[in-house]
Image 1 (spheres, helix red, strand yellow):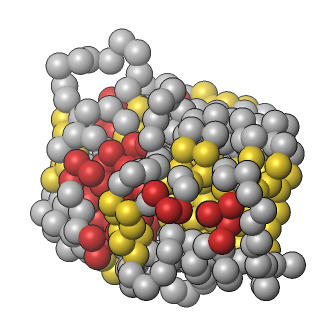
Image 2 (cartoon, helix red, strand yellow; image 1 turned 180 degrees about the horizontal axis):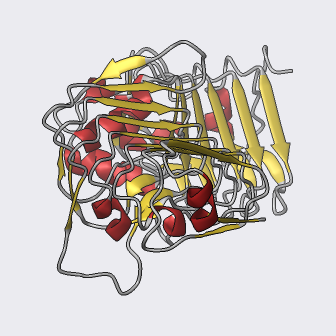
Length: 372
């Protein structure tokens, strides 16, 4: 359960490469003990920190970490500064890692720069919770980095909030789900490229409040997301937040819109002029404050892309789940526009009294040729 580097080095004084596996919980060493130049940790489920392993490793050139399920970060910024000879860094299948480098409490606040002077290869693979390389506002310099590979890191949104200098890096290799399929992309700087890769490499995109703010502030061009067919909007928790419907025009191939786990009171407001792609599926899930999905179709002033129909003329699937403030689903005028609806599902909406509300209190005939 415990490994002693002093004893290890006495037995193997010329050791250059070390691979650790198994039920190791901690490691003990000392200032007079250094890791070999190539070091790998695999399938060590119980280890929670690599700092004791890396703190005295000035000669380390290759570091590979995989299947270490209790790790939440890889190293502190002070440890990162000590790895002056590191040329290759690979982290994969560590499901709890949320960032690679973190700032330890009590570390020197005056040193705001981290330099990986010899790092050439960086691979981040199958890190399902990884959000960033570092969340602190450091300046990172990678003068020799020429290969960056990001594979199946769905929550990785930004490399670091501070300045990132990568003069030798000309592209980032990214992939999401399909084995063997990858994209080489580059968009002026690393942070912008990291953001873009989430959309270039996938047909599905997930946007939270921070993402929407980034898109608006950086003024990404409308054609930045040409391949996205499934868009998920989630994580808008502030009271009074409005649905970012104006962003839909940036997704010309949009087929499915999922709105989940947010505090929107209304999805499509009125009166307003806006342009949206003619998506076919609308899924609304866990919207506890939702009171209105869309305004009366007769009140909407809408431009569609292409503009040849009413707001939901192309909608074939409508699913509403756990929207407990909805009293009714739609008005009769809105129902008339759903001429292509094939599937309607409403589940666990506690206050729902009726599906179609007759605003005029007159007998209204609504034809449903396709719904099943």
